[in-house]
Length: 325
Image (cartoon, rainbow, N blue to C red; front, side):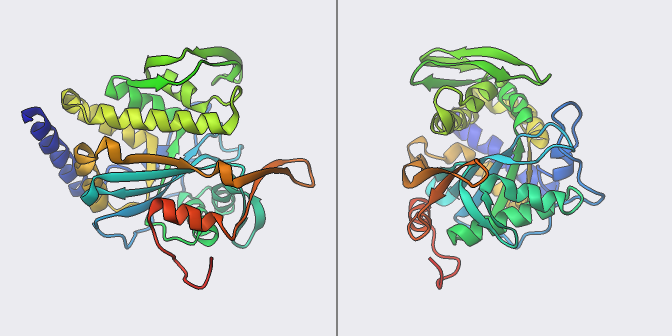
């Protein structure tokens, strides 16, 4: 009990420091990187557009993981999640959306959902805010709920965060293997994760959560959710309090967001009190139909008279516009 109290105090202090310093996460820190996987550096003055979001009992966030190999490449959001975080109720509900879902991007027509950020960014000199703005509009238009804040991550910086925690433990439900897993030098290698309890370092956690050769997007989504659940479990361990400075430093290179500093502090302080039994995960794949476009591309299509209702009900959020579905 004493260890738990110390953990709460440590996270409360970390949250207060983050709020006082103007926020933990800023695009220019998160995305100014070197190497083959660098994401385009935002233009001068790249701070997030100020948000009207205030500290409250619950928040609805749009979370996106980007996988890009340089400025000349697309910045597609290949991991997409909607997350309802309720610090007051110690609860988190997150639902994953396939990157191939066919949606209407405002002003640009119908296309895969993972391209919305890329269009906004590349149309505005790789401006992070412009990419996020079009991505947010796309989600709000198609699913009809209010997005309180957006979080984008560079998947190739995830290993640093996991390593700062000392690794994570996942319970892998079945053997996972891939013979042609892509490497940073544009090659391939073989990976294998046996069924059962696994202790993963950062690079292994990235490989585990990215592979989909064997069981497609459904399997990848499941593994991403296992990794995130395991990361929360590590953060809540009292013995990991001493790792907080390293974890926060690694997070600065991993994430960019428009969430205001005070709200970031509130969220960090609430981590020890999140109830693991109230961390819930969902998907929408069962409500989608696989199809091909006229040019042969693979997409998921949806019944838009139903899907937005399902997503809002699962998250526990209301309409943004009461005159739409």
